Image (cartoon, rainbow, N blue to C red):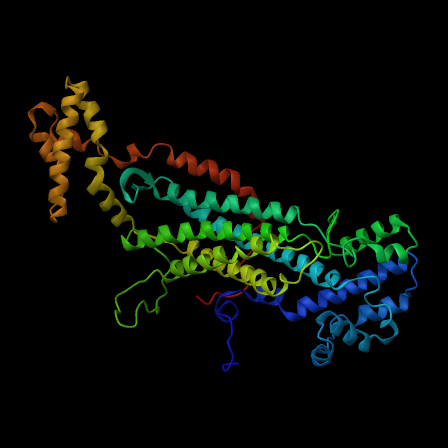
Length: 471
Protein backbone atom coordinates (compact mmCIF):
# COMPACT_ATOMS: atom_id res chain seq x y z
CA UNK A 1 0.00 0.00 0.00
CA UNK A 2 1.52 3.28 -1.11
CA UNK A 3 -0.28 5.24 1.62
CA UNK A 4 1.62 3.46 4.43
CA UNK A 5 5.27 3.06 5.35
CA UNK A 6 6.88 -0.15 4.15
CA UNK A 7 10.33 -1.16 5.25
CA UNK A 8 12.81 -1.21 2.35
CA UNK A 9 14.12 -4.49 3.70
CA UNK A 10 10.92 -6.13 2.50
CA UNK A 11 10.15 -3.97 -0.53
CA UNK A 12 13.69 -3.79 -1.99
CA UNK A 13 16.35 -5.94 -0.43
CA UNK A 14 15.48 -9.23 1.26
CA UNK A 15 14.77 -12.58 -0.40
CA UNK A 16 11.40 -14.21 -0.81
CA UNK A 17 12.48 -17.01 1.52
CA UNK A 18 13.43 -14.70 4.36
CA UNK A 19 10.30 -12.59 3.97
CA UNK A 20 8.16 -15.72 4.18
CA UNK A 21 10.14 -17.04 7.15
CA UNK A 22 9.38 -13.91 9.18
CA UNK A 23 5.81 -13.57 7.94
CA UNK A 24 2.72 -13.68 10.13
CA UNK A 25 1.72 -16.99 8.52
CA UNK A 26 4.98 -18.70 9.47
CA UNK A 27 4.93 -17.29 13.00
CA UNK A 28 1.35 -18.20 13.85
CA UNK A 29 1.36 -21.53 12.07
CA UNK A 30 4.41 -22.38 14.16
CA UNK A 31 2.41 -21.43 17.24
CA UNK A 32 -0.27 -23.89 16.19
CA UNK A 33 2.32 -26.60 15.49
CA UNK A 34 3.62 -26.03 19.01
CA UNK A 35 0.14 -26.40 20.46
CA UNK A 36 -0.31 -29.64 18.51
CA UNK A 37 3.05 -30.96 19.75
CA UNK A 38 2.15 -30.09 23.33
CA UNK A 39 -1.23 -31.77 23.12
CA UNK A 40 0.26 -34.86 21.48
CA UNK A 41 2.98 -35.22 24.12
CA UNK A 42 0.47 -34.71 26.91
CA UNK A 43 -1.82 -37.35 25.42
CA UNK A 44 1.02 -39.87 25.00
CA UNK A 45 2.14 -39.31 28.58
CA UNK A 46 -1.29 -39.94 30.05
CA UNK A 47 -3.03 -36.58 30.43
CA UNK A 48 -6.74 -36.29 29.51
CA UNK A 49 -6.18 -35.35 25.87
CA UNK A 50 -7.62 -37.57 23.12
CA UNK A 51 -6.24 -38.57 19.73
CA UNK A 52 -9.31 -36.99 18.13
CA UNK A 53 -8.48 -33.65 19.73
CA UNK A 54 -4.86 -33.83 18.57
CA UNK A 55 -5.98 -34.76 15.06
CA UNK A 56 -8.45 -31.89 14.92
CA UNK A 57 -5.78 -29.43 16.00
CA UNK A 58 -3.37 -30.82 13.38
CA UNK A 59 -6.00 -30.44 10.67
CA UNK A 60 -6.38 -26.72 11.34
CA UNK A 61 -2.80 -25.52 11.54
CA UNK A 62 -2.99 -23.37 8.42
CA UNK A 63 -6.52 -21.95 8.33
CA UNK A 64 -5.97 -18.95 10.62
CA UNK A 65 -8.86 -16.49 10.77
CA UNK A 66 -6.94 -13.26 11.23
CA UNK A 67 -10.12 -11.18 11.41
CA UNK A 68 -11.26 -13.30 14.34
CA UNK A 69 -7.87 -12.88 16.00
CA UNK A 70 -7.92 -9.10 15.56
CA UNK A 71 -11.40 -8.73 16.97
CA UNK A 72 -10.63 -10.93 19.97
CA UNK A 73 -7.34 -9.12 20.67
CA UNK A 74 -9.16 -5.78 20.71
CA UNK A 75 -11.38 -7.22 23.40
CA UNK A 76 -8.82 -9.06 25.58
CA UNK A 77 -5.63 -7.11 24.77
CA UNK A 78 -3.61 -10.33 24.61
CA UNK A 79 -2.30 -11.71 21.31
CA UNK A 80 -1.66 -15.29 22.43
CA UNK A 81 -5.09 -15.68 24.01
CA UNK A 82 -6.66 -14.20 20.90
CA UNK A 83 -5.00 -16.93 18.86
CA UNK A 84 -6.03 -19.61 21.34
CA UNK A 85 -9.61 -18.38 20.95
CA UNK A 86 -9.46 -18.39 17.13
CA UNK A 87 -7.88 -21.85 17.11
CA UNK A 88 -10.61 -23.17 19.36
CA UNK A 89 -13.24 -21.84 16.97
CA UNK A 90 -12.01 -24.07 14.13
CA UNK A 91 -11.12 -26.99 16.42
CA UNK A 92 -14.02 -26.92 18.89
CA UNK A 93 -13.52 -30.41 20.32
CA UNK A 94 -9.98 -29.43 21.34
CA UNK A 95 -10.75 -25.88 22.48
CA UNK A 96 -10.60 -26.88 26.13
CA UNK A 97 -7.13 -28.43 26.04
CA UNK A 98 -5.26 -25.91 23.81
CA UNK A 99 -2.35 -24.40 25.75
CA UNK A 100 -2.84 -26.81 28.66
CA UNK A 101 -0.20 -26.08 31.32
CA UNK A 102 1.56 -23.54 29.14
CA UNK A 103 2.28 -19.84 29.36
CA UNK A 104 2.45 -17.44 26.44
CA UNK A 105 6.20 -17.79 26.05
CA UNK A 106 5.72 -21.45 25.23
CA UNK A 107 4.54 -20.45 21.77
CA UNK A 108 6.19 -17.04 21.36
CA UNK A 109 9.69 -18.01 22.44
CA UNK A 110 9.83 -21.51 21.00
CA UNK A 111 8.50 -20.23 17.68
CA UNK A 112 11.18 -17.55 17.65
CA UNK A 113 13.86 -20.16 18.27
CA UNK A 114 12.56 -22.28 15.39
CA UNK A 115 12.45 -19.30 13.04
CA UNK A 116 15.88 -17.99 14.06
CA UNK A 117 17.39 -21.47 13.66
CA UNK A 118 15.91 -21.80 10.17
CA UNK A 119 17.03 -18.27 9.30
CA UNK A 120 20.60 -18.99 10.36
CA UNK A 121 20.64 -22.16 8.28
CA UNK A 122 19.44 -20.24 5.25
CA UNK A 123 22.03 -17.51 5.75
CA UNK A 124 24.66 -20.20 6.11
CA UNK A 125 23.81 -21.47 2.63
CA UNK A 126 23.92 -17.97 1.18
CA UNK A 127 27.26 -17.34 2.87
CA UNK A 128 28.70 -20.54 1.44
CA UNK A 129 27.54 -19.45 -2.01
CA UNK A 130 29.31 -16.11 -1.65
CA UNK A 131 32.45 -17.83 -0.35
CA UNK A 132 32.50 -20.25 -3.27
CA UNK A 133 32.37 -17.43 -5.83
CA UNK A 134 35.05 -15.53 -3.97
CA UNK A 135 37.21 -18.64 -3.71
CA UNK A 136 36.92 -19.19 -7.47
CA UNK A 137 37.98 -15.59 -8.02
CA UNK A 138 40.92 -15.84 -5.63
CA UNK A 139 42.23 -18.99 -7.28
CA UNK A 140 41.86 -17.55 -10.76
CA UNK A 141 43.96 -14.50 -9.88
CA UNK A 142 46.21 -16.01 -7.22
CA UNK A 143 49.38 -15.25 -9.21
CA UNK A 144 48.47 -11.87 -10.74
CA UNK A 145 50.71 -9.22 -9.12
CA UNK A 146 49.07 -6.03 -7.95
CA UNK A 147 50.15 -3.08 -5.89
CA UNK A 148 49.81 -3.73 -2.17
CA UNK A 149 48.82 -1.01 0.26
CA UNK A 150 49.48 -0.29 3.89
CA UNK A 151 47.85 2.85 5.33
CA UNK A 152 46.40 3.09 1.80
CA UNK A 153 49.90 4.00 0.64
CA UNK A 154 51.78 1.95 -1.99
CA UNK A 155 53.54 -1.01 -0.40
CA UNK A 156 55.06 -4.37 -1.32
CA UNK A 157 53.21 -6.15 -4.16
CA UNK A 158 50.61 -8.79 -3.43
CA UNK A 159 48.35 -10.59 -5.89
CA UNK A 160 44.74 -9.94 -6.81
CA UNK A 161 43.82 -13.41 -5.54
CA UNK A 162 45.73 -13.00 -2.28
CA UNK A 163 43.81 -9.82 -1.48
CA UNK A 164 40.52 -11.61 -2.19
CA UNK A 165 41.66 -14.42 0.11
CA UNK A 166 41.74 -11.93 3.00
CA UNK A 167 38.04 -11.24 2.39
CA UNK A 168 37.39 -14.95 2.04
CA UNK A 169 39.13 -15.82 5.29
CA UNK A 170 37.00 -13.25 7.15
CA UNK A 171 33.85 -14.84 5.75
CA UNK A 172 35.14 -18.28 6.78
CA UNK A 173 35.44 -16.95 10.32
CA UNK A 174 31.82 -15.79 10.13
CA UNK A 175 30.77 -19.24 8.95
CA UNK A 176 32.43 -20.72 12.04
CA UNK A 177 30.48 -18.33 14.28
CA UNK A 178 27.17 -19.07 12.59
CA UNK A 179 27.83 -22.81 12.86
CA UNK A 180 28.61 -22.41 16.54
CA UNK A 181 25.37 -20.54 17.16
CA UNK A 182 23.31 -23.11 15.24
CA UNK A 183 24.98 -26.02 17.04
CA UNK A 184 24.39 -24.48 20.47
CA UNK A 185 20.80 -23.31 20.04
CA UNK A 186 18.53 -24.88 22.63
CA UNK A 187 14.78 -25.15 22.85
CA UNK A 188 12.82 -23.51 25.67
CA UNK A 189 10.23 -26.25 25.99
CA UNK A 190 7.12 -25.82 28.16
CA UNK A 191 8.38 -24.44 31.47
CA UNK A 192 5.54 -22.44 32.97
CA UNK A 193 5.11 -18.88 34.17
CA UNK A 194 8.40 -18.58 36.04
CA UNK A 195 10.25 -21.52 34.56
CA UNK A 196 9.55 -23.84 37.49
CA UNK A 197 7.28 -26.28 35.60
CA UNK A 198 4.98 -26.16 38.65
CA UNK A 199 1.83 -26.50 36.52
CA UNK A 200 3.15 -29.77 35.10
CA UNK A 201 4.06 -31.03 38.55
CA UNK A 202 0.32 -30.77 39.22
CA UNK A 203 -0.77 -32.21 35.88
CA UNK A 204 1.64 -35.16 36.06
CA UNK A 205 1.16 -35.60 39.82
CA UNK A 206 4.80 -34.98 40.63
CA UNK A 207 6.25 -37.32 37.97
CA UNK A 208 9.32 -35.32 36.93
CA UNK A 209 10.45 -37.94 34.42
CA UNK A 210 7.25 -37.38 32.44
CA UNK A 211 7.83 -33.62 32.43
CA UNK A 212 11.34 -34.11 31.04
CA UNK A 213 10.07 -36.58 28.47
CA UNK A 214 7.31 -34.18 27.40
CA UNK A 215 9.88 -31.45 26.76
CA UNK A 216 12.18 -33.85 24.93
CA UNK A 217 9.37 -34.93 22.65
CA UNK A 218 8.27 -31.39 21.85
CA UNK A 219 11.84 -30.28 21.23
CA UNK A 220 12.48 -33.30 18.99
CA UNK A 221 9.40 -32.50 16.93
CA UNK A 222 11.06 -29.20 15.96
CA UNK A 223 14.53 -30.61 15.41
CA UNK A 224 16.15 -29.61 18.70
CA UNK A 225 18.17 -32.10 20.70
CA UNK A 226 18.32 -30.09 23.92
CA UNK A 227 16.28 -27.73 26.05
CA UNK A 228 17.77 -25.09 28.31
CA UNK A 229 18.55 -26.69 31.66
CA UNK A 230 16.95 -23.78 33.50
CA UNK A 231 14.96 -20.75 32.42
CA UNK A 232 12.70 -18.05 33.64
CA UNK A 233 9.47 -17.56 31.77
CA UNK A 234 11.47 -16.84 28.60
CA UNK A 235 14.53 -18.42 27.07
CA UNK A 236 17.71 -16.56 28.09
CA UNK A 237 18.01 -13.37 26.08
CA UNK A 238 21.74 -13.96 25.90
CA UNK A 239 20.77 -16.23 23.01
CA UNK A 240 19.61 -13.21 21.03
CA UNK A 241 22.94 -11.52 21.72
CA UNK A 242 24.78 -14.55 20.42
CA UNK A 243 22.69 -14.57 17.24
CA UNK A 244 23.02 -10.86 16.53
CA UNK A 245 26.73 -10.89 17.31
CA UNK A 246 27.20 -13.51 14.60
CA UNK A 247 25.19 -11.45 12.11
CA UNK A 248 27.11 -8.32 13.07
CA UNK A 249 30.40 -10.14 12.49
CA UNK A 250 29.16 -11.13 9.04
CA UNK A 251 28.27 -7.50 8.32
CA UNK A 252 31.75 -6.40 9.36
CA UNK A 253 33.41 -8.78 6.91
CA UNK A 254 31.11 -7.83 4.05
CA UNK A 255 31.66 -4.15 4.74
CA UNK A 256 35.43 -4.61 4.64
CA UNK A 257 35.27 -6.46 1.30
CA UNK A 258 32.86 -3.98 -0.29
CA UNK A 259 34.85 -0.99 0.93
CA UNK A 260 38.08 -2.40 -0.54
CA UNK A 261 36.33 -2.89 -3.88
CA UNK A 262 35.03 0.68 -3.77
CA UNK A 263 38.59 1.96 -3.32
CA UNK A 264 39.91 -0.27 -6.10
CA UNK A 265 37.09 0.78 -8.43
CA UNK A 266 38.07 4.41 -7.81
CA UNK A 267 41.52 3.48 -9.14
CA UNK A 268 39.93 1.56 -12.05
CA UNK A 269 41.69 -1.64 -11.01
CA UNK A 270 38.55 -3.69 -10.26
CA UNK A 271 34.89 -3.08 -11.10
CA UNK A 272 31.80 -4.50 -9.46
CA UNK A 273 29.16 -5.85 -11.89
CA UNK A 274 27.60 -3.18 -14.10
CA UNK A 275 24.73 -4.08 -16.40
CA UNK A 276 24.48 -3.06 -20.03
CA UNK A 277 21.64 -0.57 -19.55
CA UNK A 278 22.50 0.44 -15.99
CA UNK A 279 22.57 4.17 -15.27
CA UNK A 280 25.35 5.32 -12.96
CA UNK A 281 24.18 8.87 -12.43
CA UNK A 282 21.12 10.92 -13.37
CA UNK A 283 23.34 13.84 -14.38
CA UNK A 284 26.77 12.37 -15.18
CA UNK A 285 26.03 9.74 -17.78
CA UNK A 286 29.63 8.52 -17.94
CA UNK A 287 29.72 7.33 -14.31
CA UNK A 288 29.94 3.74 -13.06
CA UNK A 289 29.25 4.20 -9.38
CA UNK A 290 29.94 1.12 -7.19
CA UNK A 291 26.33 1.11 -6.04
CA UNK A 292 26.23 -2.56 -5.02
CA UNK A 293 29.25 -2.23 -2.76
CA UNK A 294 27.94 1.06 -1.42
CA UNK A 295 24.67 -0.65 -0.57
CA UNK A 296 26.50 -3.46 1.21
CA UNK A 297 28.34 -0.90 3.33
CA UNK A 298 25.14 1.00 4.04
CA UNK A 299 23.19 -2.09 5.11
CA UNK A 300 26.15 -3.44 7.07
CA UNK A 301 26.32 -0.29 9.16
CA UNK A 302 22.65 -0.70 9.97
CA UNK A 303 23.11 -4.34 10.97
CA UNK A 304 26.13 -3.63 13.16
CA UNK A 305 24.18 -0.93 14.97
CA UNK A 306 21.05 -3.10 15.22
CA UNK A 307 23.07 -5.82 16.95
CA UNK A 308 23.42 -3.53 19.98
CA UNK A 309 19.75 -4.09 20.77
CA UNK A 310 20.27 -7.64 22.02
CA UNK A 311 22.92 -6.97 24.71
CA UNK A 312 20.97 -3.96 25.91
CA UNK A 313 17.87 -6.15 26.25
CA UNK A 314 19.69 -9.11 27.81
CA UNK A 315 21.26 -6.92 30.46
CA UNK A 316 17.97 -5.57 31.83
CA UNK A 317 15.82 -8.69 32.14
CA UNK A 318 14.33 -8.48 35.64
CA UNK A 319 14.27 -11.67 37.66
CA UNK A 320 12.17 -14.31 35.87
CA UNK A 321 10.53 -12.08 33.25
CA UNK A 322 9.93 -8.53 32.08
CA UNK A 323 8.11 -7.39 28.97
CA UNK A 324 10.31 -4.48 27.94
CA UNK A 325 12.05 -6.87 25.54
CA UNK A 326 9.02 -7.70 23.41
CA UNK A 327 8.54 -4.62 21.25
CA UNK A 328 12.29 -4.30 20.70
CA UNK A 329 12.74 -7.94 19.71
CA UNK A 330 9.80 -7.84 17.29
CA UNK A 331 11.79 -5.30 15.30
CA UNK A 332 15.47 -5.91 15.94
CA UNK A 333 15.66 -9.67 15.37
CA UNK A 334 13.63 -9.96 12.15
CA UNK A 335 15.24 -6.85 10.67
CA UNK A 336 18.71 -8.21 11.48
CA UNK A 337 17.95 -11.41 9.57
CA UNK A 338 16.40 -9.54 6.63
CA UNK A 339 19.37 -7.18 6.54
CA UNK A 340 21.94 -9.99 6.68
CA UNK A 341 20.04 -11.73 3.91
CA UNK A 342 20.10 -8.58 1.77
CA UNK A 343 23.82 -8.11 2.34
CA UNK A 344 24.65 -11.68 1.39
CA UNK A 345 22.55 -11.52 -1.77
CA UNK A 346 24.53 -8.48 -2.83
CA UNK A 347 27.87 -10.04 -1.90
CA UNK A 348 27.05 -13.16 -3.91
CA UNK A 349 26.23 -11.00 -6.91
CA UNK A 350 29.39 -8.93 -6.53
CA UNK A 351 31.74 -11.88 -5.92
CA UNK A 352 30.35 -13.71 -8.94
CA UNK A 353 30.78 -10.76 -11.32
CA UNK A 354 33.94 -8.88 -10.39
CA UNK A 355 35.81 -7.46 -13.35
CA UNK A 356 39.60 -7.26 -13.15
CA UNK A 357 41.19 -4.54 -15.30
CA UNK A 358 44.53 -6.24 -15.82
CA UNK A 359 46.26 -3.53 -17.83
CA UNK A 360 45.39 -0.85 -15.29
CA UNK A 361 46.64 -3.07 -12.47
CA UNK A 362 49.91 -3.74 -14.32
CA UNK A 363 50.44 -0.07 -15.17
CA UNK A 364 49.75 1.03 -11.59
CA UNK A 365 52.12 -1.56 -10.19
CA UNK A 366 54.94 -0.83 -12.62
CA UNK A 367 54.72 2.88 -11.87
CA UNK A 368 55.67 2.11 -8.28
CA UNK A 369 57.96 -0.87 -8.87
CA UNK A 370 61.19 1.20 -8.87
CA UNK A 371 60.38 2.29 -5.31
CA UNK A 372 59.23 -1.16 -4.21
CA UNK A 373 62.42 -2.77 -5.56
CA UNK A 374 64.85 -0.36 -3.92
CA UNK A 375 65.84 -2.82 -1.19
CA UNK A 376 66.65 -5.47 -3.80
CA UNK A 377 68.53 -2.88 -5.86
CA UNK A 378 70.53 -1.89 -2.81
CA UNK A 379 71.44 -5.53 -2.12
CA UNK A 380 72.57 -5.95 -5.72
CA UNK A 381 74.71 -2.81 -5.46
CA UNK A 382 76.26 -4.10 -2.21
CA UNK A 383 77.19 -7.33 -3.99
CA UNK A 384 79.13 -5.18 -6.44
CA UNK A 385 81.14 -3.58 -3.69
CA UNK A 386 78.92 -0.71 -2.60
CA UNK A 387 78.58 0.63 0.94
CA UNK A 388 75.15 -0.19 2.35
CA UNK A 389 74.74 3.03 4.32
CA UNK A 390 75.94 5.19 1.44
CA UNK A 391 73.62 3.36 -0.96
CA UNK A 392 70.68 3.83 1.41
CA UNK A 393 71.27 7.58 1.43
CA UNK A 394 71.47 7.70 -2.36
CA UNK A 395 68.15 5.83 -2.63
CA UNK A 396 66.51 8.08 -0.04
CA UNK A 397 67.63 11.26 -1.77
CA UNK A 398 66.74 10.09 -5.28
CA UNK A 399 63.39 8.67 -4.14
CA UNK A 400 62.32 11.94 -2.56
CA UNK A 401 63.27 13.84 -5.73
CA UNK A 402 61.45 11.36 -8.01
CA UNK A 403 58.34 11.44 -5.80
CA UNK A 404 58.28 15.22 -5.95
CA UNK A 405 58.35 15.12 -9.75
CA UNK A 406 55.50 12.59 -9.77
CA UNK A 407 53.47 14.93 -7.59
CA UNK A 408 53.89 17.52 -10.33
CA UNK A 409 52.35 15.11 -12.83
CA UNK A 410 55.61 13.93 -14.39
CA UNK A 411 56.61 10.26 -14.86
CA UNK A 412 58.75 8.40 -12.36
CA UNK A 413 62.47 8.83 -13.13
CA UNK A 414 63.91 7.07 -10.09
CA UNK A 415 65.91 4.52 -12.06
CA UNK A 416 67.45 7.20 -14.24
CA UNK A 417 68.43 9.17 -11.15
CA UNK A 418 70.01 6.13 -9.52
CA UNK A 419 71.89 5.22 -12.70
CA UNK A 420 73.30 8.75 -12.78
CA UNK A 421 74.81 8.23 -9.32
CA UNK A 422 78.35 6.97 -9.88
CA UNK A 423 78.55 5.34 -6.45
CA UNK A 424 75.39 3.32 -7.02
CA UNK A 425 77.15 1.16 -9.59
CA UNK A 426 74.15 -0.10 -11.62
CA UNK A 427 72.95 0.87 -15.07
CA UNK A 428 69.27 1.55 -15.74
CA UNK A 429 69.05 -1.61 -17.89
CA UNK A 430 70.54 -3.68 -15.07
CA UNK A 431 68.01 -2.24 -12.65
CA UNK A 432 65.09 -2.90 -15.02
CA UNK A 433 65.99 -6.58 -14.94
CA UNK A 434 65.27 -6.63 -11.21
CA UNK A 435 61.78 -5.16 -11.56
CA UNK A 436 59.72 -8.24 -12.52
CA UNK A 437 56.66 -7.87 -10.21
CA UNK A 438 56.25 -11.65 -9.89
CA UNK A 439 59.53 -11.78 -7.96
CA UNK A 440 58.06 -9.64 -5.18
CA UNK A 441 54.80 -11.40 -4.31
CA UNK A 442 56.29 -13.98 -1.97
CA UNK A 443 53.99 -16.91 -1.17
CA UNK A 444 50.76 -15.24 -2.31
CA UNK A 445 49.79 -18.04 -4.69
CA UNK A 446 50.57 -20.76 -2.18
CA UNK A 447 48.57 -19.01 0.53
CA UNK A 448 45.53 -18.75 -1.73
CA UNK A 449 45.82 -22.43 -2.63
CA UNK A 450 46.11 -23.43 1.02
CA UNK A 451 42.97 -21.53 1.98
CA UNK A 452 41.03 -22.84 -1.03
CA UNK A 453 41.97 -26.43 -0.23
CA UNK A 454 40.76 -25.93 3.32
CA UNK A 455 37.41 -24.45 2.29
CA UNK A 456 36.54 -26.35 -0.90
CA UNK A 457 34.97 -29.35 0.90
CA UNK A 458 32.39 -26.99 2.43
CA UNK A 459 31.11 -25.78 -0.90
CA UNK A 460 29.18 -28.94 -1.66
CA UNK A 461 26.62 -27.39 0.72
CA UNK A 462 26.48 -24.08 -1.17
CA UNK A 463 23.05 -23.29 -2.54
CA UNK A 464 21.96 -21.72 -5.76
CA UNK A 465 20.39 -18.28 -5.47
CA UNK A 466 16.75 -18.86 -4.49
CA UNK A 467 15.21 -16.01 -6.44
CA UNK A 468 16.18 -13.18 -8.75
CA UNK A 469 18.15 -10.29 -7.28
CA UNK A 470 16.75 -6.83 -7.89
CA UNK A 471 19.87 -4.76 -7.34
